[in-house]
Length: 299
Image (cartoon, rainbow, N blue to C red):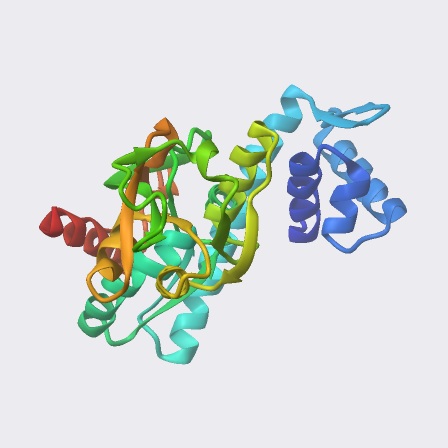
């Protein structure tokens, strides 16, 4: 049985979408072409790989096994392509990192300068993603390493804890909350907020929290990083929720007060995510070790 990478990527997309139609769209194929390719895979395998149902498809037991091996083959193909590209460009390494908002704006800018100085012929490709997208990206080899702020429970992935932070409320000095030691997030929703951009992990998380409360946040302005959020809050535009590490960095130089949130979700455990059972390329492993060492040294 010969394996066409186009067919393997199509099958992975169909499994992820639970739909031949959506899988075909994700791989830029017509439904007819995708259906024909899947049928050819099943004929080649000698067994059905999918259960066709009214609202989509499910994997048969053989389909689950096929998906596992398809992902492994695609990972190896991508590793080969990446390694050959490194040789052709004269690079020793290229690390692809998918990270959530805090890691993208606060964590990696602290860690990467030292890492890149120590590895002058290694490039790092950094992309901001939501936590769920990060896990999927590492699993399907779009990324070598992921950084998330929630425990990842997904087969095929390994999560390595490296630090704990918490979310806090930041308000201007003189604000009516400034003398509070702590406050429930729900009690802040009558205020104007300064927030992160719509695609950030924190914005998505707080939207979920407010949806459960039935009362939306009144967001006046959305910005690209936590330092800009703090500056805007210090100018009196509104209040905001940021990681304590970001608040601590900005409290001294701005007219800000940090108020603890009483909600249990304020605690944010940070993890590095890699593929389970695989040896990372040396340069990707070096980045993981640099991240762990930085936070071990900073306490």
